Amino acid sequence: MNNVIEEILVSEKQIAEACKRLGSEITKDYENKDLVLVGLLKGCIPFLSDLAKHIELPLEVQYMIVSSYHGGTASSNEIQIKYDLEVPIKDRDILLVEDIIDTGQTIKAVKKLFETRGAKSIKVVSLLDKKDNNNLKAEYVGFTIPNKFVLGYGLDFQQKYRNLPYIGVLKKEFYDK
Ligand code: PRP
Ligand code: MN
Ligand code: MG
Image (tube, protein in one colour):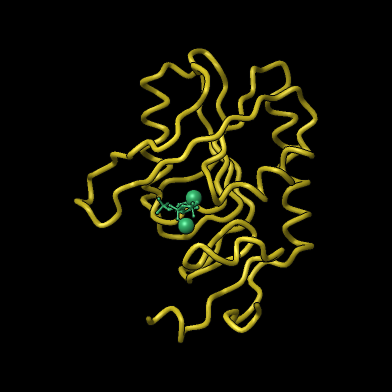
């Protein structure tokens, strides 16, 4: 398993601490609100599951599968919805849960979509945030990371390694392929 990992960027312990910290911030901020966690599959799974345990509120969990069109024109912020929410979100407080904000394209497009659906508020919590992503900031961020290929704890390399308990950096020899 470890033969594709150059180094551990965020340890299991650091992830656990971040989930606790973010969970208690969110608990404070969303008291008496109609909180819906919207997880973007598949990368969100471990983070959403650990984070939600630290949000001490009666929240609802919904999921979506979207794919953003990477490599298109810079202004393109369309997404293809592969699996949609089960419920309308009009007048509800939406917190998007992501494992990573890379270019920011996915989050930007989903936020825009939810605005058109009439959400009361739309915020983002992401475990990882890369430094240079369209000036798009998540309201809640676990770790700001350099622009390297990372994997583990939900993040895949060719659909594998999502089950690693930490965030690792992919070895260059694999990255170059
Ligand atoms: C990855 C990641 C984020 C998105 C970030 O998902 O989990 O959802 O890309 O990229 P962006 O900020 O440049 O839009 P991916 O599309 O690989 O799907 P997955 O979660 O199923 O791995
Ligand atoms: Mn994803
Ligand atoms: Mg992926």
